[in-house]
Image (tube, rainbow, N blue to C red; front, top):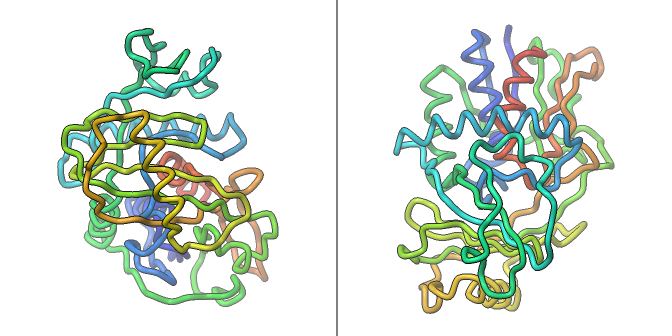
Length: 307
């Protein structure tokens, strides 16, 4: 069939590639090039964050985790396996996503930073989006996916343009799909040069995280509810830098490469379902919150099954 995918972030590109591999003719329309989507600002360590329902998120996330582990064998993808910790100031139970992570274990006391009472020791894929999005785009285009820069304001504009339309518009689904449930959660990060930092660290309070990628380290972050302003705030940058340095003292003096802001497309639940819109068969795939990368391959495979 001829399938039209709307959106070229990580969800749209992944879905397009899986659909092309299934034998369909696939075209992408996108307002922004992949490198200018919110996906480009993702940290992005595999981690289910601000996405429901949990049972489906666990299923999609497990599929994606296995895919990223395989991709980490190829340096061209920008996916690397990293050891690290998630830490807490009070004792906590095992996480609900534990079953998806092979080798999960509780952190030993000597592994915890000062002031932390509990933690998880993890080995997870870190997806360097400055590399991965370009690789994913090239892979899709090499398979025959065509990408056209075209913005739309409503799904009505896709009528009779394809056999199936896949809606991966993220935050723009508020307008494109007229979905009032979608809202933005602002995330600000800082990129630094710190080659000595090779392990990730996540502190849910804040949230605060230190994610070493291929050639830089992501420091974060923020989670400002119902906020759509993507302007970098210098005071926020200084505050998150201080939090990260308290967790990882080796960051002191690390040169700043960039400060960035992304608006997470949140919703009460991920919307992955079929709908008829003015006679057009539409499959929605948006509302992934802070888990767009984490769920990308699992959701792409479900989109392909639905198509």
